Image (cartoon, rainbow, N blue to C red; front, side, top):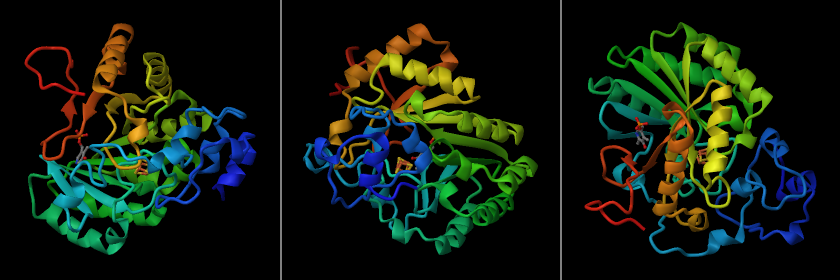
Length: 323
Ligand SMILES: *Cc1c(COP(=O)(O)O)cnc(C)c1O
Ligand code: SF4
């Protein structure tokens, strides 16, 4: 783990004086060494650096940006289980992450309330609702749990007869692959009766390394389907070229692109926003270049909707106008 912003600046050979750094923020700086090592030295505009360096732009106010843009807080006074979509429930397995992404829509989430002791209640409500077929471990990041705690949780989920699919949402395999390489966990997954899906979170081809490739190979050998979700971020991956390169590199590591999310409008992240028209143009270019299975679904999360909403052509008639 990198200990401080100063240490990061040393590593990437930049002077803190030359960067618009916000040293004092509610959402603290956090980055693992592995991720930091992929940042290009001497480049203040590096697409990985921009994801993790707290910037003064976070203090700017953007209209329409709020602390709880997707309505999770409103819907869940005890946010360890979020059951918004049919058939699948999302369990906040850990309040922590191994990295703090500045655009995170959970940056204002009251994670302290989602402690481990709430699992029991969450597991009971899953057990009482036969409509839930898939349990999604999310967070925070479930891989920030100890190996034993994660295995125990998976075993508890497997014991619920009507659950047939386990999904893990984690950024750790990308940003700290050595930390996600856990032999007992891999074995548990391989032996489980459940269908297994790992949805990693990677925004730029530079995040993928030989270490992540090796880890992905291990998950595949444990019968885990590998998907990726990306967040579309201004000046980080907001071009067809960047996302095409990402799709190709993901595929080379056995991962298929799943979602490309339009930014959730969380306060502090307004400077990362891409307009829908530009997102649509990028999507069109990707479709014209790549096989369909390498084109992610471009989606936005609209509070109260029963699924993630597919982006539509903003210029087409009869569709609600988008910004
Ligand atoms: C994104 C999300 C899911 C999963 O949705 P899929 O479309 O199945 O990937 C489930 N629950 C919540 C609360 C979510 O935000
Ligand atoms: S890993 Fe995911 S949940 Fe954690 S800070 Fe990054 S975007 Fe947010």
